[in-house]
Image (cartoon, rainbow, N blue to C red; front, top):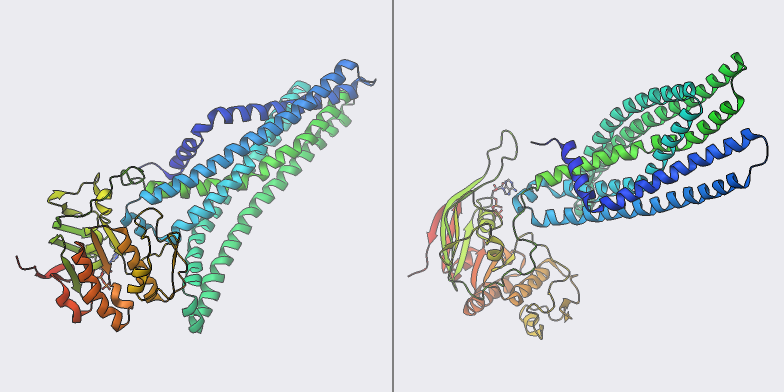
Length: 551
Ligand SMILES: Nc1ncnc2c1ncn2[C@@H]1O[C@H](COP(=O)(O)OP(=O)(O)OP(=O)(O)O)[C@@H](O)[C@H]1O
């Protein structure tokens, strides 16, 4: 198994691959800009040492170097900024695609409180790094260029500076190792914080009503985690700050040593010494900038690792999910079948017994109303997720019209269904223009008794600010208009008033059946079980009763 740091490096290189020519050009321009600055320093030193006014040649060279330094650094900045932004955009698209194509069970296992920080926090960190990248390239080339010029000026002085930089770098390295540990620890707490934020937003009503829970969330969970992140970040950044201060002091020590050498041996060339100090003082800025950017680089490293972990987790996407020219679902089906199908959830903890559904065998024919019933937690939703092709069976098969559904055909198979899950998500753009939008939705809305609340304007509902039961009726309207052959309702009627519940079971379902739809209903409404043609009762993940329609 590849290590996360190796995969994060591989992921970075893969992201950068389309931009190699631009990246090479940007680096070259940055180096050119940096070297021109070194050339400018050499020219200034030369003019100062000459003691007389500069000649026309040197002035011309000076002006040329100015233009080169400016153009090099500006163009390099523009190019690397473009690369950085493109890389971040690519990363966002790549992550979006991975999530869209990840198997549903893997996605559910990953949990949204871990997913969101990767998509927001980690991608933003990479974006910060992208902004810092261009100035980093320029600072690096200025530093290297200055070092080369120092070597030209005087070997002993170059060696003294190089030794100081080496010592400073060793201290920086130690700080960086400790700093990264801190950033990683803080990043783990970010996931926890996200979980608390979700409780804050989604549990607002419960928190308002329950004071002890509210106060516990505030003091222990929220503040505790925030303070922990704050403390770790302060500690980690302080390490970098101290290391940076140490590096800065080293510079002055080197200058002090050079001046001391001059005092001990007055024969030292004063021009060389002043050039040395000039370059050293100039170099201090870019070098400190390089060092100052280290926390951003370290944080980006942690973020890349998290992104690589997510990519590794979703490394087996379902095939063909993002192909635009998928087959249109047929208007009818003959049969859906599960044959000895079995699905086992991963265990929730080390001592937890995993829930296993099946093996289940089940056949539903065209125009049939199937009820799946049983106690809470017996596996009804898991069964329909398997029948819908959301959870691929670990054993056994799904068959459509007698033919096995394969990974290649699974997405086409899923297009046969319209589903309203118990925890369904109501999209804003409920009705896709041009895809079965009724000319006039009013009769449907009247049938659902919500025509006085909602209208359909240009294929979009005029409002979704409705009661829970009314919102579920909107979902039913969508089911009607999608014109798919199989409809799945997971406890749809649970939120409806008794009158509308009766209408659903005794009028709407038979009406849909008369249209040739196959209907699968999860229900606890035993008053209406007689509506079913076919009733499947589950108990602890097994079929306890299978009342088939009369042949
Ligand atoms: N993502 C999951 N990971 C692990 N176990 C799960 C997961 N989802 C459900 N389970 C377990 O599977 C069992 C069946 O759950 P399922 O949602 O299928 O029940 P159900 O019959 O639909 O219940 P209800 O009537 O309450 O809706 C439960 O015991 C539950 O703990």
